[in-house]
Length: 60
Length: 139
Image (tube, rainbow over all chains, first blue to last red; front, side, top):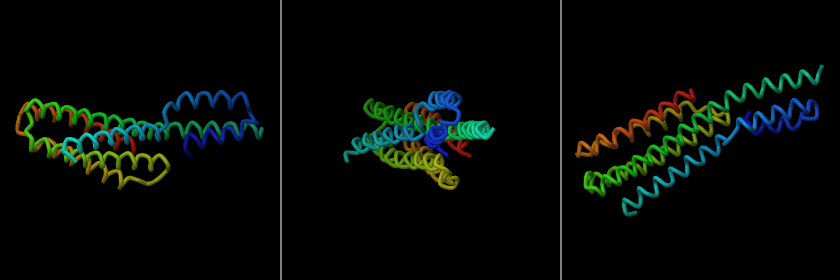
């Protein structure tokens, strides 16, 4: 289960215990920061830069 | 009573998942740091080449190698992403890390200038440590 799915689940059941759910949501979103996908996207962009610079040095 | 039970189950689910997603986020951060470290190695090598401490042949070999390291690095990223979605990636992770590691090991083999070699080896060592971190976090 991904954090996004958990957030969706919490939203679905938020009618049951609104104050608790609101507190948990706030905590979760605070802890989340950048998602794993976003961080890996940054890493991929850096690799694209490394590859482009290497090809430039190789004259390709 | 039923509402309380739902809340408790939900909290347990969240806490269990936080530990798990934290694990993959740590691996992703190590993968990003690894890419940054290799980019730093590349910039150092280009600077050493322009200072004449790395000859043209060594420079071309090194940059050619980095094209492959960049592909292997993206493979590592992809494996971490699959793992974070619940995929069983142990074999793929091992293969990606091993190929990246061996590419990095070959990196300084052909560099003759001892000062340039020492400088690049030191940065590569740091990059390899990050790969070990990814492997340790994922397993």
